[in-house]
Image 1 (cartoon, rainbow, N blue to C red):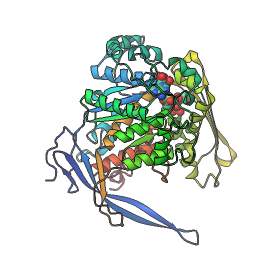
Image 2 (image 1 turned 120 degrees about the vertical axis):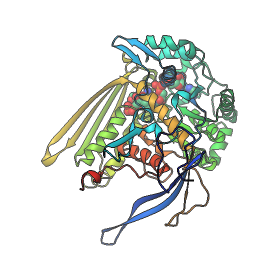
Image 3 (image 1 turned 90 degrees about the horizontal axis):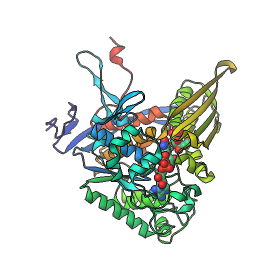
Image 4 (image 1 turned 90 degrees about the vertical axis):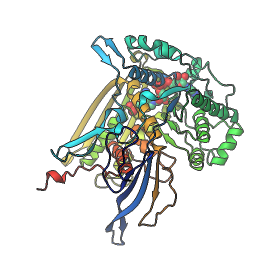
Length: 524
Ligand code: NAI
Ligand code: DG6
């Protein structure tokens, strides 16, 4: 029956013949409307509205979920763990500026809202928390575990990170001290040589092997069993690795990648070994660092196993501003001509990035973030034309995790004039990254419970329900260099990335995409 009482405590129901609630599922029929464009010989376009009908099915049972972090003992790993524990316990603590309480600021899922619709009586917007649009896991309920090549317990590594206030740390010290990272895989050539002195918790072997893959798989299974979990999501928040060379016969196909792991090939990175282990376990794997973990063979492997992957590189501060600001400038018809981005930071991430090959991975992911916006505007930019873009990162131990990011945007305005925008962004890097880690876990988990099939008018019909594509491009908002299904466009513009996320979620409960036409307030 349509609109039976929801099994979970959902904040709203959708009153529509296209939406059916059962105890276990929300089933929706959804008309997806796009515009198909053809170009004639005369260079003129013909735009044809197109409609595809989809069925969506959302599993309403919220699973008991675990988050396993690779690099658990690092700044992000310890900060996100402490943050979740503090929220779970409802802690507050003294600082020199007064009392502070645990919160999830910076998490789109936990801290932002979306418009549900317009109040039938008052005509005012009704906004609801993002977290309540679909039946999502709450971060307080996540079981947390992971690996690190450094064997310090989480309390000691939280102290090493130097991010959180002593008055908070004192309250969670005991719980944190009981958490100890599992031994991890360490292939010294992939991260900076300056990391060697913390690598005291490593599995034997310094090259890829099936033993490593199997050990990681076992670790995941053991964690799941020990905590009575339905699901686990694994995320790489370990050091930035150098790029793996793309070698034909080694990492170009799924089969070759597996052979390369069996043969201990030197171009298989630890992060790729983790990805392969997760794919074999059917566990989503997200890469929060910039390196090319997802070599073509790894993407093909995920597709073959119908397992989810997402990446690359958390988009926390400077790049998040960039993907909003550049979108604004170019959409405003202003011709951005150069971006100079400087960073200095003093945490272990900065230390690792002071090595050239690892810096290069970060430089690449920080540099490509305006490409789609430039390419989309043929009025301002000729084919192939691009603003100058420089990225500099310097290690400055004294500032610790308090990263400084300085940006200058230089643009050409009306009649040969210039606009210069300077930004100076200072904040604890790990306090920006931690909520992203949470969002990535919650959204990736949600995507494992959404299925679709097309019963279409345009020839795209599919008989059986299936998952979204293995490459979860819906995670793009949280990532600097979004991975998309092979052959599909990358979207960097922040507002579009948010739109994709919110509108896919809305579609799953039969709601139209958010639009800002507000005709109800314009036509009387
Ligand atoms: P961190 O250096 O404090 O932590 C990394 C941890 O990974 C260390 O504890 C290290 O021992 C461990 N590690 C290295 N190789 C490992 C392996 N093979 N297996 C298991 N553990 C391993 O760095 P932080 O600040 O936590 O950042 C983590 C990653 O996230 C870095 O790659 C960084 O570039 C990236 N990132 C950080 C952002 C931020 O705002 N903090 C934003 C965007 C990306
Ligand atoms: C210096 O840029 C260190 C990096 O790890 C960044 O802090 C991190 O990638 C966050 O970058 P962004 O550009 O999102 O602030």
